[in-house]
Length: 517
Image 1 (cartoon, rainbow, N blue to C red):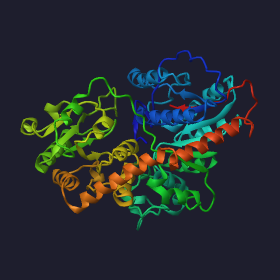
Image 2: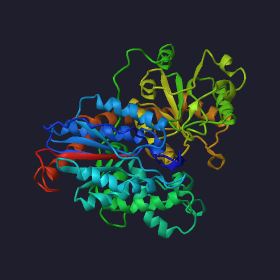
Image 3: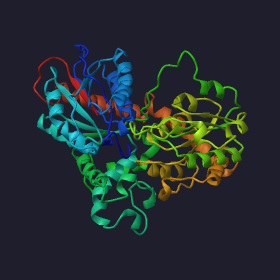
Image 4: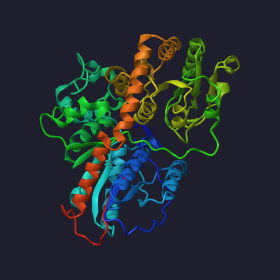
């Protein structure tokens, strides 16, 4: 999930110049349509949805093919960023096609993502109607629920792809009722928020978008909570082993006033792994010179950046902790990139002499870094993270304990879950009223707890290794997510392959359509 708006559009994504589609492989019996969304015009949602789609293709026995409908982004830089991802996918050889919608000019300088999505509805309708083969299903990102109306008009089954976790989904589904019952701002309510399947949640841990009910984001969150109930199913990037009680609560109707929710398909962890590079990244080579489990990684996702004031606090905390570190530090966005961090100017952001004093213990990296490769390295023993769900899943996959530092979106709820519910993290005090500020002394304490020999850190490390085994078992043959993916694949083949007609047949192929902005 993403937070506020960039480049004139809140909660938005990327695309590129129109180009001709690749020839469709006629061996497939159906096409799956995907409509993903990338938060803050970032590729996180896109890559997760694409990986899920490719796994469906692999399980369908060539009965399905995949079309991804992509909205065009508002700037050339953003278009270039996502074009790189799309070019790599198009070269993969799989039956994946990208259909780029015509560019729609936002009506104002600052428009919400959901409003931007609605403007594309006629183009989405035309794209789906224009396919030469029957459509098995439309899979939409969870911020594109207004496009469910298009699926109803075309009599195409629609599934929501929920890139976050089951706890966040449970909150979405519960929100319409909370909206009626909680008449004040959440931070003003007495007691905790009840999310079935979860321990009582402090209001301070709720997602950013619901903390101000006068904000249009809040209204849209309530809207999405209602509309999820209209989908034929909800595909969730989680595993039963990670969130069993929450998944059960949703299935039992405890989040939806006793009304049965759409069928859940927890198929995660859905993580995209690239082939190993020919040459190791400099950060990975540096890790090769460090002892096992001795380095704490600090990395804050594609949207994470800090002011000089906060960077100075981090530097002091790390230096006083005495532990080895690898810190990915990004600079503030420029007016042209807005929320997209820039490469950091370390001379401006770091205290004088810090790099020299810590050169034998730490490495500060001022630009993007290969997070998965770093987490996979044996030298990494802890992770200070913003707690975005993609990063959390990558971290659990490699069994690294965490200290969450939430910055935006649903990350405060994620942090609460990681510490209280799953137990793979140590708590860190984050001052939400000061824009998620963390004092040097608190970071020092958290790093020492995470990396040291105390009871709290030991329990987090043990639980992280337990979750590593559970995540890998879930996606293996016979695992819970493997079985759910098979169930979903069979459902799509049934809907489009004769068990249930969804639209008139025009050829022998069946298409699945994934939607993305």
